Amino acid sequence: MAFTYFFRDLQTLEMICEYALPELRARRYINIWDAGCAMGPEPYTLAMLLRERIGHMYFRNIRIQATDIDGSDLFDEIITNAAYPKDQVERIPQEIFKKYFVPDEQDGYFKLIDEIKRVVKFQKHDLLSLLPVAHDFGLILCKNVLLHFNESQRIEVIKMFHSALMDGGFLTMEQTQKLPKQIENMFEPVVSNAQLYRKVVK
Ligand SMILES: C[S@@+](CC[C@H](N)C(=O)[O-])C[C@H]1O[C@@H](n2cnc3c(N)ncnc32)[C@H](O)[C@@H]1O
Image (cartoon, rainbow, N blue to C red):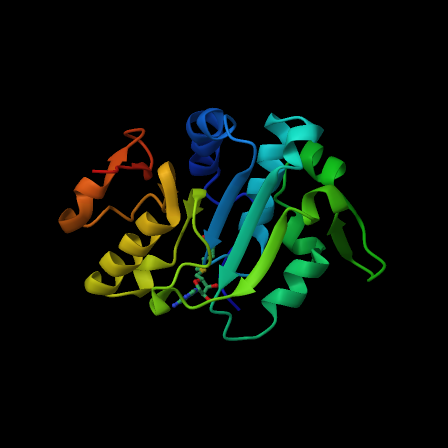
């Protein structure tokens, strides 16, 4: 199973809400690609944080396309069910947990409410195919995935993200993942203390 957990790297997710969300909200829909989403805690955490910041009405205009190579062939079912065992939901802040989770019929499991569940859709996808799952994304999130690739693969995948983003769209990676020098000019940093970038169009 891939390593991931709810509320991982909250600082970066909050940067998205603070710096990217106000610009993205100017559009009717916000399309997000979570590339390398594992079993779903990351896209669902982002969905809950976005729901906290925007009203019920506008939240319906958010779409999170969650993709993973998923060697286990289990992620689709897990993400679609959105039910997680107690030990995986324990680190979620209580007020968020109480608002967005309900006990599942499976003993010891808790399920995300439909409002959150419906914005996240899973698709199996290999990033090294270099084929974007769609275009015109406002935000692409790719965390703790690129470190598994060699430098030339990282460069090609990030170029593919650039082509999949709308003009001015945002890209975010984990704190330790810097943009390779060769493609630095394709993005501009949005903040100095997080790997949050804006697509530059020449
Ligand atoms: C450490 S997990 C990161 C999960 C989540 N993004 C996070 O930060 O918590 C890495 C994920 O990358 C996925 N992955 C590895 N190679 C991939 C590829 N070529 N295409 C798509 N996903 C890939 C793995 O299946 C795994 O779920």
